[in-house]
Image (cartoon, rainbow over all chains, first blue to last red; front, top):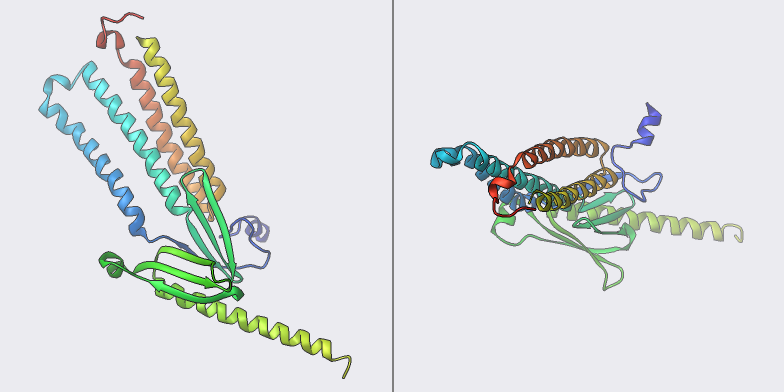
Length: 198
Length: 73
């Protein structure tokens, strides 16, 4: 059982360090995917509805070759919608920010063939800013969180995520802890270096 | 006529399968959670295979000669 847990950890991403714990996995807010999926759902409902409406409107077309051709077109559209729905899902679900005990990992998926992975260590975090702008984002509490790094040009953006203020606080807390740990390590190293001379 | 539609349909059929393979690859390779990967892939494949099977079945039962009687190929 223990071996199985090691082989199939509950959460895992490429490049995860041995003792690195995944604290949070953040996806874009569900409102982002809903907008895209509404089209799929509306078209699906329209096609399901047309299966019962067409025979009543055109009784002569409800049997024979014309009806078979209609079913073929319907089925083809369903197939395309099914593929499109999953492509939208992949774009949403694999666009992810992972907060671990050591760093922030940003995995950005664009379509099927573009995938960017970048990371930021907490010790390099200098400032964190969250922005919620607009009526719907305010009502549903989603927005952007920008993490400013030690180098002025670099910044990390969590786009359209839920609870941006909570995430900002969490990143700040982890950054403070990392800085404190770094300072402690540095002090210990200095003490060790000075110890033999005194 | 059946030959032309047959060739076009084969191209379409292979396109569906190629896209589906890419989707399955992404679901299995990049999912952070094993359960999501397995459940998502199974759900996708089952519905996709059913839709594709019905699609092929209806296509091969279509009488193209009756739809386009003037063109003989």
